[in-house]
Amino acid sequence: MRAFGRTACALLCTALLGASPAPQQRPNYGPVPNNAQTGVVKRYVDALRGARYDDAFALLTDEERAYFGSAASYKSVFDADGFVLKSASVVGARGDDRGRVYFVREHIGFVDHADDARHEIDAVVPIGILPEHGTLHVKDPGKPYRAFASASTIDASGLRVMVKKVDFFPDRIDVVITFTNLGDNFVTLLPYGKSILRDDRGGVYRILATKDWTVTDKRLYEGIRLAPNSRYTGLLAFSSGRLGDVKRTWSLTLAPALREGADEPFELTVQIAPGA
Image (cartoon, rainbow, N blue to C red):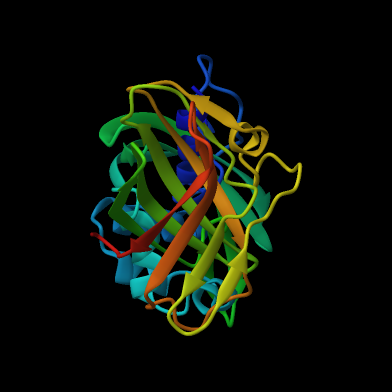
């Protein structure tokens, strides 16, 4: 279940700010004060529940609005995972007038890119409230600054590659990919060998091959021997600074792959289009 773990983790770390599944016994999150801070966090959650992303974006701190750059970029992070906030309630808070963290129990719908199916999860999400310029704002970190879903696909030597999602962080670009073996024998995937991401403006982005398994996909790093009629969804990260404009044409070359019985390895290059 490694593939699901990586894509679910990406969802929770970006759209859900590091939320964790609700435990069987409710912990003591602290009392919820009846004050202006509570009013702001409820307005923010209500805006997300109503998919009013412009309103939610306007409640963020200056730093967070600058991070996303625009309400459209902020919205794209939720759209890329098919995020739907079905219900939410504030269950606790900790802090004081200088800053308070609220704990919000949410029932969330999302698309798991490993199986392309919609799922639902209960999670408790931390949301910060801070004073800024004489008013209260929301601190809601942990997301990429922009994202898009895709269905860009290429087949070669009986191997199908589909790019499912691209997330843009200040220090890297994450690409969620599904590999499907359509051939009659095994194929070995070794994408940390020569894989590279490019854009149409001459940008070249090298794969991040560290042993930080929150960034590097351990199974792909070690190599996967994919059986016939099986598939694997994983995540490849590429080194990048923050991009002022991500509306580019992207191409991803994945290599090497080796078909059992073949003399030479092969590579695939997929042209990535948002919502393809």
